[in-house]
Image (tube, rainbow, N blue to C red; front, side, top):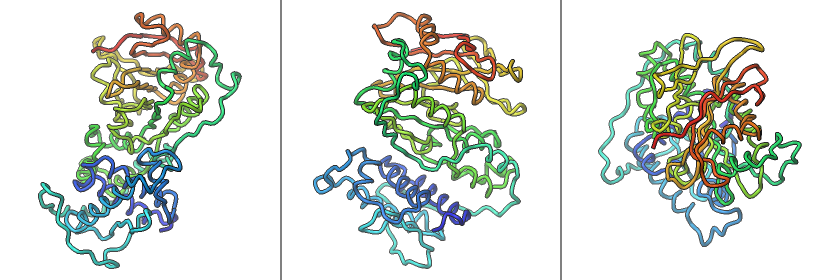
Length: 432
């Protein structure tokens, strides 16, 4: 199970994705989350033992040191998952050369070659039709474009990490966050008693869509149904299906997203306001309905932005020839805002939107940029009292200390991207 064998790890990851997207697992968000967490711990962390209490905290939101004797949520779901795995490998996954199991007494999954284990046929879940084996695509020559683009992204080593913030930064370290308007803004994103999910973009999926020019909907992304047609989509775009699969399965996020995250922790750093770092591929509708969230990227690389787009006029489009994304104002006859210039005269754009979450129980902050400098300028802008005050003055009146929902387009000039170099091009409330 060595990570040094990249081919083996990719084969196991691909198997996990197929199981997670199957009808045996993807109909239950909790079983899917459990499967992905357990396999990530084995594939990414090389762990050989996973304890019940760890799973209860990380997957099911239980408090540390909760009583596993009185709360059997992990054991119940693990038992259900074991049965679903047996059903998958006896029916839809009957052609799989490798089998995934979760041994009793240990929650660390085990990968076995099919010849190493005998499995009894299992009936499919009630109401599900019999499956037909999927065909195998012929091997093709690897496409260098996939690897060249993939090398530009940063490997996201783990799918979920809890950012435990124990000490507040001093005023001089917190990017100058001393103004009341900045505090009012961030208090709506990071609220006491409610978790805030910081969702990093999925750079691999963004690159794949750019190469194939095949847009991916959030529903396809969430249930992983795109994996079923992956070989055909790659072949139609003259890409090597094997290399395309390897790219899609890589957990990569943009460097600009990680840098934004570092600045975000400096902006808002409070022990009683926990932030959960999530990778877009492992996020769920349940969380976006219940939690506050910060969504980074555009809807190509972070499909969780898609549900909010109908109420926003600013959309991000791709220019394949130039290799860039830029905002378009769909409410102003499609006015385009592509980045321009170079060096100290470089001009970029950042969009910032604040909207209710899907359950209207919290808030979602969406930040996108034409590049890393523009995205990070957005973080600096939202930490600057003068800049945020100017933004607030352009919004309709609301309750004291409350920001209404809005979307804003910020123009950033110069490579420094300092707040004084930022201009508010437009600021308005979303459509109902």
